[in-house]
Length: 119
Image (cartoon, rainbow, N blue to C red; front, top):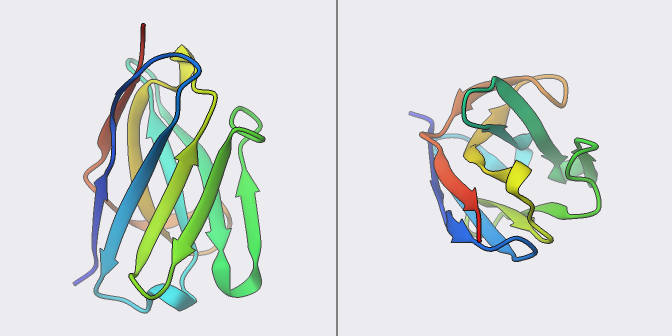
């Protein structure tokens, strides 16, 4: 059974940083594309980033490019999202997801974790 569990969310001030983690199990993590998707209050889902670690390829949405970094630790089957220079528009529930085909295509999702950027 595929399981994805996010951690590391919380409240941070504008300009601050957070690192999200996603512990994965139930599939071959090192051979899978992984990504992050977010949903801001009252809005739809927004793709954030995808990593094809086995191919050393990463993709980012324009809204986070240069501020967020996606990475993996295959020894721990864990996905990360380092978020720097956070702004209020980054406030959202962040979901970890297992990739299926293209950068924004996912077949399994975590429960999500809240990130709030506010002073």
